[in-house]
Structure formats: C-alpha cells, structure tokens
Length: 291
Ligand SMILES: [Zn+2]
Image 1 (cartoon, protein in one colour):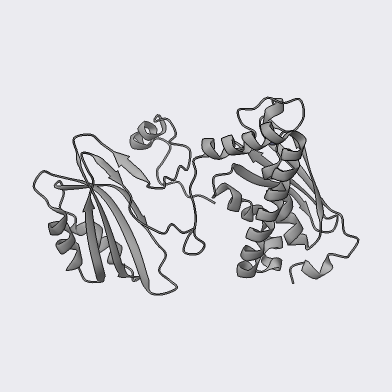
Image 2 (cartoon, rainbow, N blue to C red; image 1 turned 90 degrees about the vertical axis):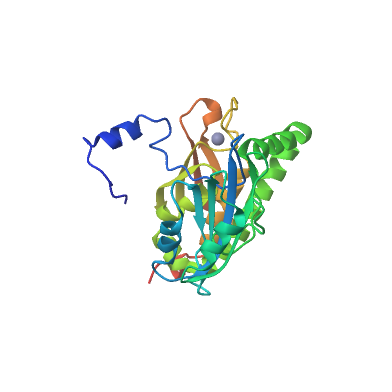
C-alpha cells in the first residue's frame, strides 16, 4: 500500500503530475552523467549504519556550492556499515579534496572519497555492483538484452525458442532457490502476489499474480511491458525466456515440474502478456502450505 504525500488539490503535486513519467515509480541506476560545461563530483562515503548519519551528511553539503542531483545508499544492517554514493554538481572553486575532508570529519563517517568527472562527463567508477547487498549484478539496457534474445530466435528458429525457454527455466529456478532460502517456502506461498514484484524490481516487466490456487496447483500471472514481447508482432504468443523464468519460479515454489502457457501476448495486440502455470506432479502439495 502506498501513502499519498500530498492532497489532490496540492498545486505542487498538480505541477509534478503534469510532468511526463511522474506517475511511474521510476528508479535510476547511476552509470554515467553528462552535463557539458559542468563540474560533476562523485562522493562515496562509508558510514556507521545509525539513524541520522545520512541526514547529517546531506545537511553538511554546502548549498549552493554543492548541488546534489543523485543519491544511493546501501543497506548496512548486516555489518553496521553503509556506503552512500552522492552525485553532485560543484561550483568552480570547490575541489574534490575539500569536499572529501568536509565529509570525513562528520560524526559517523568512517571514510570519504571524492572523484571529479572530465568536462561534464562523470562515469561511476564504483565496483562491484550488487543486487541489494547480495549477489553481484551486471546491467544491460533492455534494448540490448531484447536484441540478444531476438538474435537467438532469428538464427536458430524453433530451436532458439526452446533454448531461451530452457535458459529462463534454469535462471528462474536458480534465483528462486536462493530467494526461498531467505524467506522460506511457506512465506513465499502466502505472499506470492507480493513476490511477483521480484521480477518487476529487476526491470523485466511489471508482474502481477492474478490467481493462485495451491489446492488446484494452478497460477495465472500477468506481465505488462514485458521486455521480451513489447515491440514485436506475432500471430501466436511470443514469450520464451520470460515464460521459462515464470515456470522456474513456480516449479521451485511447488517443488515440481510445471507447464507454463502464454495465453495472451502483447505481440498479438493484447494490452499485456498472461501466463497459466500448472503443476504436473501427482505428489500432494499440502506440505508446502503455510503453517
Ligand atoms: Zn508476450
């Protein structure tokens, strides 16, 4: 559930809503920034994972000489340390060393480093990249990934489609095995509608679990804006990789092979892709019911 932060008649909100994309919950991963003629800084600050430390850092930035335009911070609850990445425009006089020294002396700050971009180009030199605080990640833009998938289908035809489905299935199983170790199967079963966001959070498309019946071992999933199907026109459902990923998810959850059929598809002119997943094992599923 989301909580509105302003009333409908709020003029600030009305102005903001008029801006394209405002209603989307867009999240940007900082890879590079380019503002020709500007001085761009990247500060990364190792800090104590304590309430107030990040606020102290933000309050210490001298406005208007340092204008913060992007911020990320890691979850440090597991080891007591967080890393904040600040991306800011600096005036003509401030040096990276000065900003680093200012940040370093703040209570709760363990280490602070600042780098400057070149002629308005700032490429993020942070490495490695991690999903939340765990598995290492690689970022492609969706167009690149969709292009790679299309090429497999174009070069290998129906064999390529099978290969993509199998790859999706393996990826889905592997990822969900890891995730189920974290939250446990009963929790995942109980909150499957919410866990559909796991795919959305990775940018694959907005996933909703429409219907889930443990007793009948049937599930219906809708994906809007699927990276695989959008932009394509096809007489039959188009998804292979994402269909495999969804099958991997449910087969891990049900601890059984499944069938996964795409029943509606954006490529066929529908507003969203929909999938029906069915458990094909005769074994009872009662043991994974939430206790
Ligand atoms: Zn589709």
